[in-house]
View: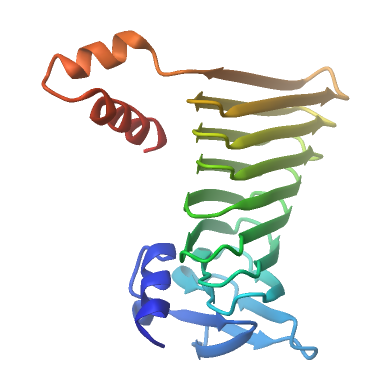
Length: 305
């Protein structure tokens, strides 16, 4: 890997990849580096379209890195990664995609990640997206996350769009069984003419299943963001969806909440708040010696923290 590759990895990973228990690095549509151990195995799909990750039962505190980097302008990379999480296991999965485009052709990555959580398993999934390069070609990322959760399992997703992504459609679908918990924290910042759309579709099938979704976003310049949530409660269950956005300049944000209670004991809540930075916040920070721009950046950074 060259310096550009290393820069992309540093932006989408929270850790040193070589310290992970298992990892797979994909560059420009091909796997270029891999590590496994007796508890976490990574196997390439026969058609070359992606990988299967197998976590054995009772595996505790395993760390798995599966970053993707793209440096070829004009490339459309589609990958299917399936995660099979064994009973009673507890792992951290660090994913993300970095695209560096210096030419006029669009570079696209479509990552389809499918999770199958067995009983009482636990997953923390960290995903970051980043774009760089001064080419006129767009950097386009379309992540799809599909989750099937069995009794007693739990999953936390921390998803962040850092910067430099021109267009993205982010889709998360989940089916929850009895006594499961899904927590999703999403952070997005767009600027210039960037476009970002998020879709959450969660079905609560098992009794005492719960889902907590928090989306925080900042849209500036002429960028556009859209947030859609569709939560269905088919039994005694709980869901709380919160969408908060700050808009500046000529940007726009659209929030579409959809909640369906098919059981009298389904407790479903959706909250949405969109607005500009409050003047009182700016005045308070500027009284401490910050310029208006510095105060705005401090507020935004705190909001997305």
